[in-house]
Image 1: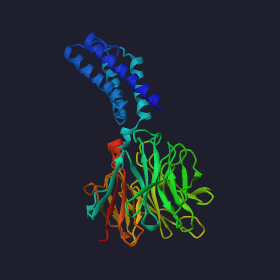
Image 2 (image 1 turned 120 degrees about the horizontal axis):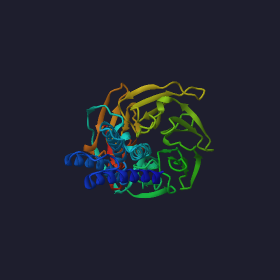
Image 3 (image 1 turned 90 degrees about the vertical axis):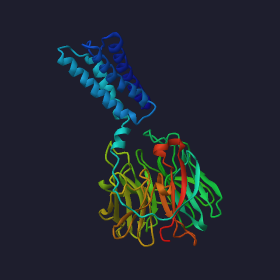
Length: 420
């Protein structure tokens, strides 16, 4: 697919630049009959060359592709209209190649459109809480998840090699689970195969780690306290298992960010089925860059889900027969990633590229409690500590702003103290 995109981009660029050169130097062009003045030749040449140059740039900077393609279509239409107005016959073959090639490039690489269509976060009151950067990691290392395990150990799901300009952003990625002990020492617990990401973790009472993974073969991993790893569930093609938590029935539940549903997984056998299928869990087709259903946690018997693209936080109540009731709205205007549930019922929600942590109180009040001023840049996940000394400490994992900084981004682990 990427090779076809490059061919289309360079093909359109060649036609437009050749036409611009011809009209400027040779005073005639296969795209447009000879203009009547030198000034008009310059205007036509510049207007024709700009989208051509844009298409070349797009081969290196994918976000440019959609805008360059739309400009090329506009230029082709203008040239055709100007030629007809002058009583001449347009070169329909060359102009059609420009239009078809440009539309093909826009469809294959709509990143620019998706950025424009990102959901808008509500402007909230800023009530900062104390923050401390615990550690900044190497360039290119970003975190997807943080969880507190026994004995005060923090587990971090890290990824390197992600390319968010590519639809298959995980192709060269490799993930790790890092155990960070209370004395600050760290060790690698598990490494994924290349092409599989380290996703969101859930930790059982016996310290077994379960983790979602996206990639060529999306699924659920189980890592024993002894470090023995097994992929217990392989999801169908097109699935994107993301948020993960244990339900009150002892089963694992995972939000699927692509298919817009909630999976239920047996942690022993790995068998899975669909627990919730609801259109409010889906992202908008084609234009959405943000995921659909994303973070997932239980608060008692209520399953709470963030839906990033719709900016909603939804609640589904578990019924005695194992089904779930209809969706009810907890909050809107928060493009949430993952979240932590506080002892008072408040939700602390990370917003990833929006660089904030938002508190949603049980009464519905929403406030921004941390942002880039506290080093919250690319916050993906958040959890409370498990030790006696840090049970009221929120640990935030970030990717360091990987959407904008790319391979130079440096993930961080940050501590927030909301109840001091």
